[in-house]
Length: 234
Image 1: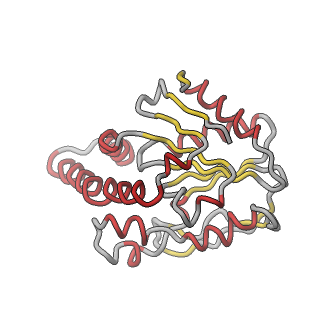
Image 2 (image 1 turned 45 degrees about the vertical axis):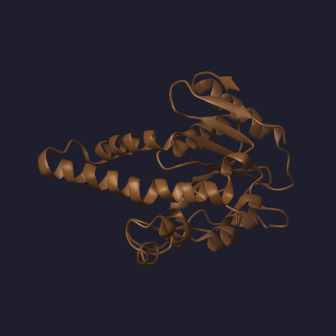
């Protein structure tokens, strides 16, 4: 187990990325519960790799959603719906992970769906450099259907209870300060979504996929300023 500040963690992850040699672009999963800090960590690693001259592709599972009607067909707060119905894994493999993997032509798309507009998205087809790095963040990335599609697997671990508080803070920052009934309603909605949908869906995922056991690197991100991490032998 290693410990340190954010800079040491990011530097260590950059070292690990550099140590993995493939004959195709390197596909890195940055997995973990909602509000664990996956996107921030992937962005930090991407910035260092780019400064070193590495071609980096940043993408997220949030751009591989199914339409809202399908995501919520079991109910807005369904944990099973979150785990089984939210993400278009076939499209992810078809347009991104497959082209960047063994035998792929390196012609990829980084997104297929606009979640805010709830509409398909036609992102441009691009060609990756042979030594490019895909840093892909999101939930449920080490599930059985996807786990073998990654060349490096990072799991960002945070206690589920802590993610609830982070979700409240993130929501408040996104919309600004909200007072009175509106603020209380928003907090109640976040609480219910986490308690009934997001945390139970992660519990389903842990039971089904055992993601921590499958990870090459586990980042313990309880304290954002002083994380700990474990790099496992490959």
